[in-house]
Image (tube, rainbow, N blue to C red; front, side, top):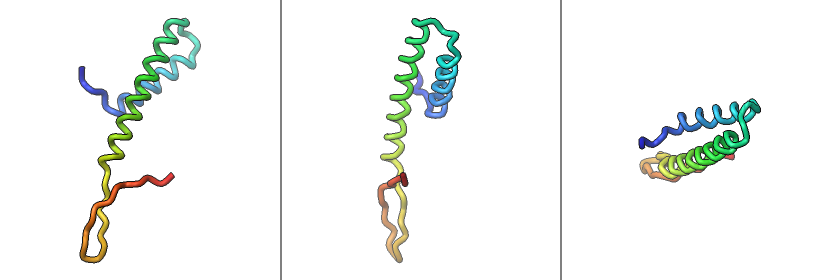
Length: 74
């Protein structure tokens, strides 16, 4: 099975949330959708963590260029 892209996983999560919010699903279907959403959420979190580890910034410090880890602002 092909690995889902982050953007596709987010879209599926949004679709699942809309389905759950609609109130039109039965209990079993709702539980299954919730489980699918939780798995997708975990996968998205893992993809974000992996991307964060890969991001580096090159800092031009006078004549020297050095690589530093990217630390996002909160």
